[in-house]
Length: 206
Image 1: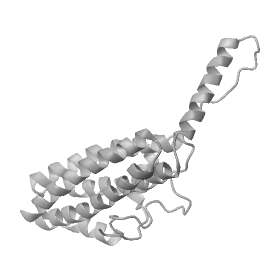
Image 2: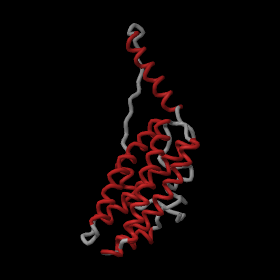
Image 3: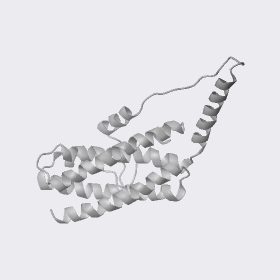
Image 4: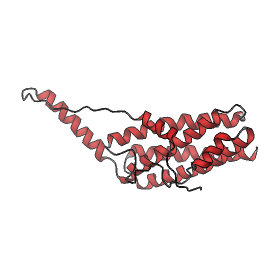
């Protein structure tokens, strides 16, 4: 696994910010005679409190770390998809990875909002020091490469990137509390372990 110290690039961070929105639905019923309205508001508050409490620190860290991790995978896939001289099998894999991880970013972003947790950890550096993250220099090499060289770089970088994600997901499976987050972690392990094997086969054939 390639463990580097990484700060989300402007492109990836802009993508994250675009996924976040502002939504508020608060208020109270000042009229004592409207019992039904009061009960609805109370039920909503109870539901929100239950959602907020149905997670632990491991769930929060999983989402905070996996969002920028996924964002970089999308950025890497966008870089390879922007090239015209890439083997079709590699292009198809990039489409598959982007198609799976972009919606997962939205899902985890919604969780953090529902949990009233920040997008980034206490260090303030999303993606800092995570397994599998590609450095700015490595990412630029991918963007500058062409043809078979670009395909090889993408596959080798994404294999390490996926391996890091699998490690993070397995930690969530063993330590997380949120059933949704744990299930997503299981889905990530299953999908990305399969993609790792596929990428190794493609890389060997280049």
